[in-house]
Length: 140
Image 1 (cartoon, helix red, strand yellow):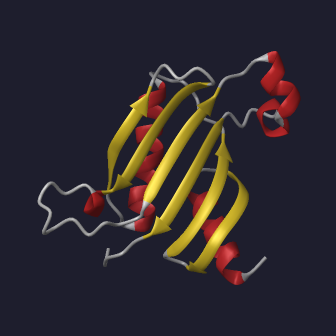
Image 2 (cartoon, one colour; image 1 turned 90 degrees about the vertical axis):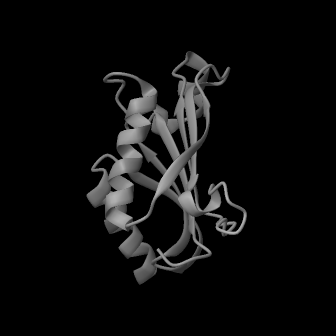
Image 3 (cartoon, one colour; image 1 turned 45 degrees about the vertical axis):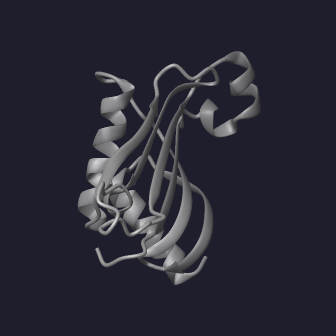
């Protein structure tokens, strides 16, 4: 594990004590990486609010801004899915849109007999799958 990957691991452990990094991709710098994280999301009020709370904590830790691009509350193979994009990618004015590639994709996996057989992390309660592409094309 490189020192950059260790730093990213520390970031996610501070963000969420239940997080487990499954895969690192394209780790270029501390502010330019992609990572797949599994975590234990609890359905306190609703899945949407649980996703929002996770992204709020990530926003504070990384000094970045995110907006909801899409939600999938009735997905067939998942309990819930919500996709966030960097605020700089979603500005209505074309002159201000920086085409940023930053994205957070949160999926809450369904717990069934079949998924429990196939997914060892789900057996241990890691029902949340979070893909973070933290590659910004602008200053934060």
